Length: 578
Ligand code: SRM
Ligand code: SF4
Image 1 (cartoon, rainbow, N blue to C red):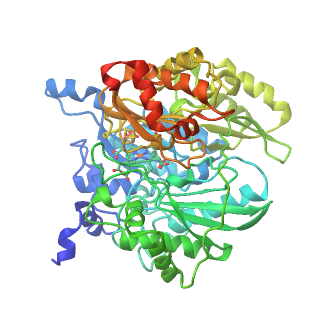
Image 2: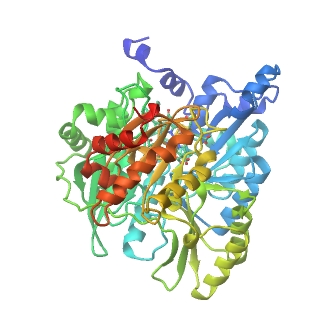
Image 3: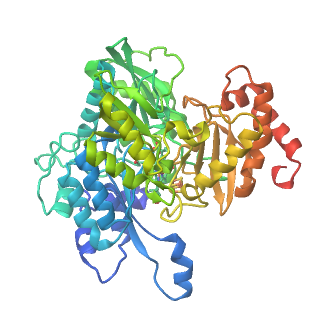
């Protein structure tokens, strides 16, 4: 063994030995004498779109009772730009009932997750997803993840170009290994232009990735300056597509976004992508490929905590990155074009598609499509989609867009949803509308505190405080995550609430709606019950001292994060805030 091989992380050796992601997955899933899988299969399954885990709610009680954990799998689809047909949605809804926990979960990257799948359900579920011409290949793992772009079905040249580029990239960056089809479909070739047009076609197994794939997950999103609804700068590769009116002008490429960090470990940190180069239309694929190769060849394969592109860019610099990229591309590249501040559309409510039809953005709290006692979201959506057969799109804010609606259908669609208690744009406050929560307990193995399950009660408490302080109708983005991995992108919100330990959260303030500024931590361990109280004096100060129309994070940054904190500490006068 060479020196280099010795230093590789365990995950690298698993990838190398897997025969392009095949490993022993099929045999281990077929073995129902145990619900567990080996470490190798755990790692490889990610590339197939699945995480193996266990129900964290029941783990302690089961241990005390001498029982093994309740093992289960999560499955994540790939769905570029979040686009789905009605038939696909309705079939996925059935699959959620048949193989998972009866819910579909819209993720913060415009796709669906299924939770609580048993071993026996894995192969039929993934095969059925493929037969819907969808995929799970590369849903997780060290490859390019689901490509995000604006999901709004606006029929203009801008959105058509974003979609065409996103699909082109999704196909280009999909793993080409035939293992996926062998494991889940007994070798059947299910092809879809969005995912894997050249799989199983022989030749080099993985022309882009090579035998060990990427050093770590790799995320790409496309936006325009006029609508950064995908938080583009939080991606490894942020592609900002530039237009003169409706005419496409080229792209700014920004590199090295990523939000994961560890509490108390300064070597890990969130970072926003920084501008590197301007890319003309004809170099779109070669330039993207160059960025992927840059990280493939320079990302740290010895330490997974240090393996994202953000560390390469932060440590080696933008100038170095540009000159390396030029070597891969084979020519000099221009500097990025100047662009203004990003605008952001959340696409909630009614919007014209510009083809005479409408789309309706329906808020889905934490993206969980589930029937609650007073809100039958799952049944309501199914009823509307069954009756109207519309296309759908999933947003990066965990919401769903019902597309292609005729003017004459609008009232009835609203009525069906309201009859099921579904809250629409007119029924919610800005804080409800813009709050994101990651999955956390009970399925996420990394969760340190609750997120999705406490989101609605927390919104209600924060609404009360905002009402008291006279800012209830102000636009604000609050994001809660169960741990510092940052899956709900908490560190770019006006306010970030980051799981620290059971029932306790770090509180961050000062991000912006446009997704262009990281927030800063002001409190380290706030008990869940104290979060609204902690926010209250800051809202009062915002109301009192803000410039006209100034959003919360912008205000905190202008006024001074430390000054805002100081004021809050004085007003609160409690131990946990000192
Ligand atoms: Fe994430 C790991 C859920 C978006 C950063 N993420 C996980 C895992 C798989 C937990 C694990 O490793 O065991 C979570 C599964 C929970 C469960 O039970 O379902 C999980 N991440 C999610 C989703 C479902 C959150 C959601 O509420 O929607 C999102 C799925 C996106 C998708 O469809 O692909 C999700 N994760 C994100 C984002 C936001 C984004 O990409 O826009 C981030 C921050 C951006 C970034 O990548 O830096 C994010 N997830 C992480 C990290 C930290 C990575 C790092 O560089 O340190 C981890 C942990 C890891 O990779 O080791 C992680
Ligand atoms: Fe799990 Fe942490 Fe991601 Fe939340 S932020 S889903 S707790 S990994």
